[in-house]
Length: 303
Image 1 (cartoon, helix red, strand yellow):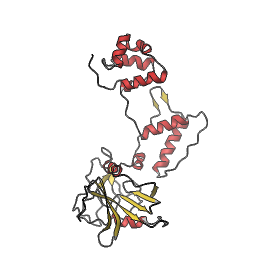
Image 2: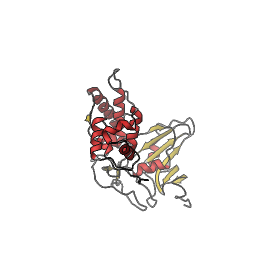
Image 3: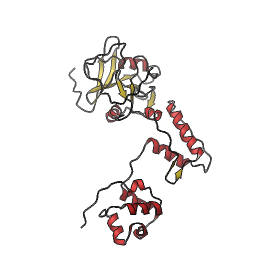
Image 4: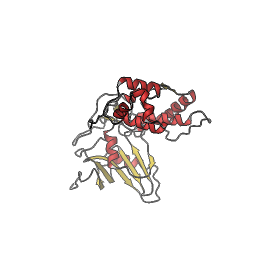
């Protein structure tokens, strides 16, 4: 072939001849040296609806001797240069959607390697794009990408593969926690979050939450974001310093919970660790989350 598939993380080969009966892909996309998708290019002004059938045929026609992340290829684009449609076959129910730009190779690589530690489901059989495969079975182990030279018969389903997409995650979310620490979700907030997740799990990307004034819209939004895009707990000392800034507290205000002025300085300067008694007092007196304060952190040597 003559192309250096490892020249960069993402390589596009133009006018790539596929297996007989599958045509010629306008662009064959490689990520980290393995085939990952195709682009069907159309003239400006062309209608892209219905072109998915063509790119889907390309995705199934990669020669068996070439390395691929999975078969059929998972990432399918149709583009006029002004409008671009994209299908992620790693979704439980793949469908074409409009995107503003082609994804970076790093993003595709993240999707291909996502799902570590998650359950996996078999990839759709040929001809089932847009439909959930019959007899889907949950597996507990990760499955390596298709290797060069792998052969698949028309009766044999492609190998199982991790699904790390948002649609997969929203379909497998744990139950909503409605109470924790001193916080509790109101019934309207619970209903809004559960209904939004149910709508997204049905592959409906657009939703509107309508709540009355004073019903806790901001807290609802924060808790939805916290479930789907969690942020690691902060460093305990950084957290404590931020609490002081937000609440306008001075070091003297911490003395009832930590100890003397010198002791407070040692803790905030990371010379002395927070003790369990300090954490208990801070959590009780300032209503701070103990699970954040109890996390380990690096200390500095005393001068």
